[in-house]
Length: 452
Image (cartoon, rainbow, N blue to C red; front, side):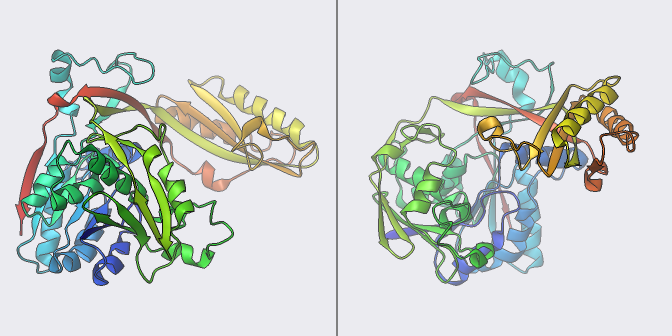
């Protein structure tokens, strides 16, 4: 007995049409689309400020129009956290798209409860101090403009929606691997205190959630093995999960890519601080007890995962508008490149001195942009590509800064040039993160059903 969960999205903008070979080939029983990150929520917040009916990912429109019809006809449920800051509006958009496609009987579930932005005063009165996870300093709402406040929820509401017959479940900020745990719990009926099986489901989700990475994308292990012509057409991963939590990870049959213990290890340790304590809202998974085995071409068996009780608190992440930034890229050439670089830094600092600039930073692209001083610098390089980044509290100051810097066009170091595309750019918002914890008793999910 095996239940097959596919992954067709690992970030906002991923190729969600990779779900189609899974569906049309009969390779999956459920498909998940993981779209959110902290930056994504900030982007969606800007969308929502422009239009209150937005706040969800554009990818959902593609899924609704191109993937849902085939999935619905084969009774393959779809699960996505692309609802972002507005899952209900996303559900209505999907319903309207389904109607236009002539579908009938589609049941869409929108899960809310993670967005606590409007409840901050209430939660503060209930005793929540919102202390920073690293510094223990309490949140000061007056220090920066808050943009969003989202709690990382778990798999439970998705399981409830699937058991109620939902064909498409759209959530807000559900923790990434919990999306994949949900269809397993719904199918097998795992208890919410069956920590080892829940831990196994979380490991399966963690390996699936970044789509192309586990099948050869971003892989150092396969740098001499994988055919680069296949990279744009990787088959996204599928987990064949047994009732005891043991599973086999593979990729979509007939598609490009490689799955082996090396690619699995690379993804297993991706974004993991403590492999013995991978904390999620539903369970704390222990990666150190598991065993990996290559059992065939593009087949890795994962067994032995253990788990411990779920944490008492949930993670809550605030987004804060911490100002705006601009960048300009200059090029300096041989000879005396380092002297020209020193002159350029002084020129820029002196030019921007009259303005309320909060920070100026210089980076040498291709020389020390990745490893800093870890490698020696050339004595007199043939060229230096200099990225200059500067920040301010408002956009107008940055626009004025660029104008003043361009006034120096014929007054800088010998032979300096500037990238025209960076000159014409617009200031970008700096969305800072403030992670904290919140009592899970304060968070109650709601499920809104929309039927076609």
